[in-house]
Length: 157
Image (cartoon, rainbow, N blue to C red; front, side, top):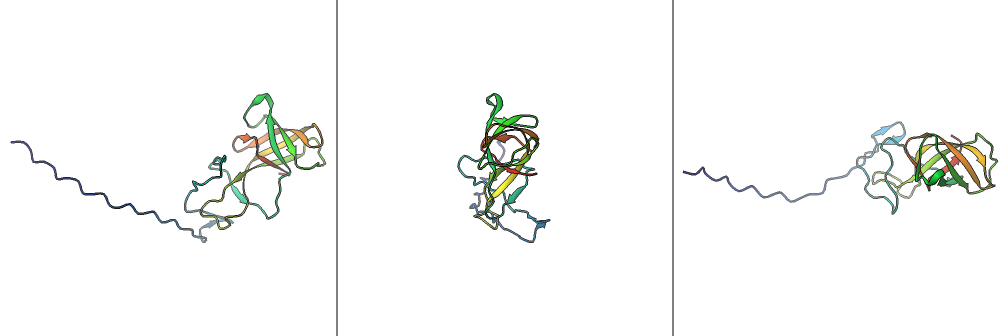
């Protein structure tokens, strides 16, 4: 005789949304640890490197310039590469002046200030040649990830 048939499987339970909680008491230093990862990024924006710190910038913070081009038509830059920065206003440029490179970051669901300006520190560049009052060629000294066109720079490290 044939073996007995297995009983039919039980029906699957109705799916329930997973609760998302924010616990402001879970803090390392002054950086709150989110309970979830954001999947909501602005159009055209990509996620940052996992080891890149995000900062909530002070109200009124403005970048000194923007990465506009790379040598030899590259699309991203790393340590040792040169790139062009367009300044928002003339600065007292000198060879060796360092800039911190930032990338805009979207608020996560866990961020308390949903309208704040969040940035990721991408790297540090150094001025090597003033091309005009508003353009400077810089050398990438340190980069935690690739530097891309549109990244922002602020004088100082």
